[in-house]
Length: 610
Image (cartoon, one colour):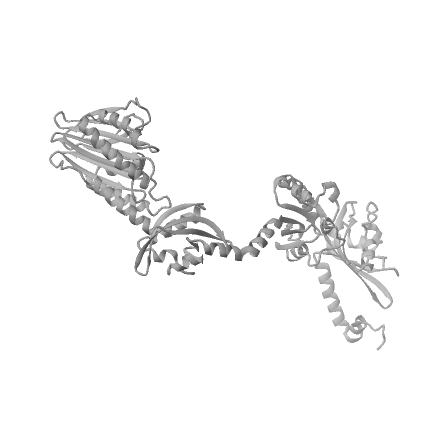
């Protein structure tokens, strides 16, 4: 076969004239209807264009020439002399270096420069060279890019204070700018990086192997990676975000780098010492567990001694009566990231009840929100406290019989096992009753002991006087000798059925509520400092006339919120003493579910005149 025999020769020799004409017309139609500008013509021996054989309509529309004008002139007509390195002839130089796709500037009929992206090929047929060039107007893309660069300058000012390293690059890896953290990270100024490539910041001479920026450009999507950079001895988290123009082409790439070297070092230390940490935790006498969504995911050896506290079990499945409370509290610890909260719970082991004190805190465990709990067996202590609580309750339940004069309802809710609240009634005679409500600072055993001393002092004072004001003054002088580090708030009152008057003295408990036929809710206020603060304290007093059906409500500090709770006030206005006490008790039971639980000892004395 003749080496000069070409595909074109095959078509000419094997197709009929009619078929050849049809195919020629089809190619010409495709050529003319193309949206891109197509130039076709002969080249000289060096490959430079000599003339135009054919140009399509898109060329004429772009340059403003007729097809006839272009076919009758040299390609130099559109060669822009103002841009000597960006003319049509430069395309051949790119072709010679195997870069067939280039950006050039050509000149329209009215002399306006038109930036174009051009693909060019040079062919040889029957010892003749000809070229085919396909170009696309990229004026809009350049305008968009210029706008983007202008926006990037604004962005540069915005990003100054961001601690992460932010770099903006052209698609050829040329640095457009860094934020302040970026210049500091590379120890460069903006003038030192101008025109540099990204890899030059690492003193490299070529694009990095497996360049992630190229992948972001190629796939037009965000690429993330974590790597160790030997040149700067640092671990970094990287993210490359390609910014696209309206036509979907990448204009530039935003790189975000976060130095995670310190975190990596800490992770290494933790990993290296994990076994040591486990040994330390396993030596703790208290149980330690970590739960995620209520499921135990980690437990030390002490915790595993409690049969129920095994891995992959729900923590609240083994606390009868506390399931809802624990679940809700765990949810709140995670939601609000609470650092420490302490509650008492009961668990069942070998059919025995064990009292546990749980100190719980929010932590992050393997990337998940979790709760770390330190569990301490307080069964023995609880038994002692329960004994004290029973004794305390029995003491408070010793209320004289006033059934012919008043009806009494009491609500007594300790924040812990034993309370710092105290109340007592003393029947002086059939027509005179003296009562007192006290609140000792603190909770637990020490405050309970103070309560016992306060009870003795109160009954001694009632033997010396029937006047609430004098009783309070006696207690004020005596209390400092018996109760050292606690302060006591109190409210002392008398009900005189000869005169049908109530006398109320305030000493730290300075509010109470009255309810009459004419006034279903009235908040009474009396001034007076805590007991034991000053030897010559002055305590405020109120004298109130009462009649049958009138009600008095005395509240300790734990119930102060009632004064601001519209629902509880409305319920008070329309309930009997018993109904209100029961409603308030149910209200407190619901509070137990919350993470705060009952914050303070709470006591209510409700009295109705018969």
